[in-house]
Image (cartoon, rainbow, N blue to C red; front, side, top):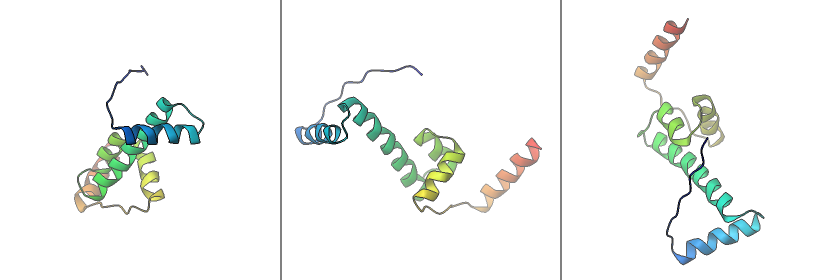
Length: 99
């Protein structure tokens, strides 16, 4: 995985909060920002799924994890599956094709 550098602008309060959080965690600000981005992606995926704006597959892509891991994350956050009959039929079709 290649690493990219990103420069962003933020207000003073957000910057101070980041620095304080990094100090509390005994980490550098860059690592703290990366962790917050990862958490933000996960929470966005959960909210999109709960709002029926994303399928489980799309939620997993947003979060940057496998579908299996996304199912575990949803369970950890108490999110119930919002599968429709069409989702079940599509899954059955996929399983039959694989087997």
